[in-house]
View (tube, rainbow, N blue to C red):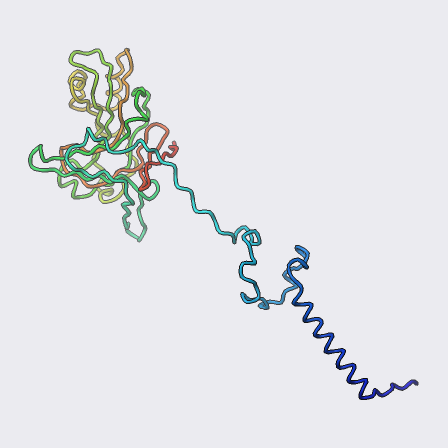
Length: 301
C-alpha cells in the first residue's frame, strides 16, 4: 500500500496561494460577464435563485420597453373620440341668455347604491332656461346642427327621439320637457303656406319614477305631439298638434318633399327649465353629447 507523502510547509504555502488566485480569477471573470457575453434566451428562471435579484442588481436604464412582457408594457392613452364640429348654439333661435352646455353627468345615486349615468358615455347637453313674468323676460334655447342635415328629405326620417333628465322643480313650473326642433322648407302648395316652418316635437311628460333621473328612450314617432309654426301650421291643422303619422301625411302632398334646414334640441319660452338631454337619435345614428363634443354612434335596433 502506497502511503501519501507528507507535504512540506513550502508546498502548503504554494497550494494556498494558488487557491487565492483561483478565487480572485473567478471574481474578476464575474465582473467581466455582461449582456454581450450571454446568449439571448439562454438564462431561464430556474437558473436564478428566488429573491436573489433586487433593484440594486439592475443597472438604471438597462431595461427597455421591448424587454417587458406585453401586459407589463405602458399602454397608450385611449384616443379622444372623434366629434362633429357642426353642432352648437343656433344663435338666431336663441332668446335671452339661456345655457346650452356640453357637460359631465348628471349622475344620480339610485336606491341600493347603484349610480345612474347618462345613457351614453359620461356627458350630456345641459339646458337651462329662465321663465320671467312677461314674454320679454322669457328665454329660449336652441342647440343643433345647421349643416349636416341641410337639404335632407324630411319624409325619409323614420326614427327620432332622445333621453331626458328632468326634475320635480320643472314639473312645478308647468311644461317639464325639452323639445326637438326641425326647421323646414315645407314645399307645400296650400293657401297661406310659404317656404318656412318649424316642426316642433313636444314629448309627453315622463313617468314619476323617472323624475330627477334619466328617462328611457322617448320615441318622437310614437310619443307626444308635433306642431308646425306659421301658415303651414294653420293650413295643415298642426298648429294645435299632430301625431307623427299625421304630420308626415300632411307634409307629403305629392309635390317636392319638405327639405330640412336645421335640426336640434332646445326649450321654448313657455316655462323655465333646468335639465339635460342625451342620446339624440336621427335614423341610424345616435348623437352622444359629451364634454369634448358631439360623438356619433351607430343606433342599435
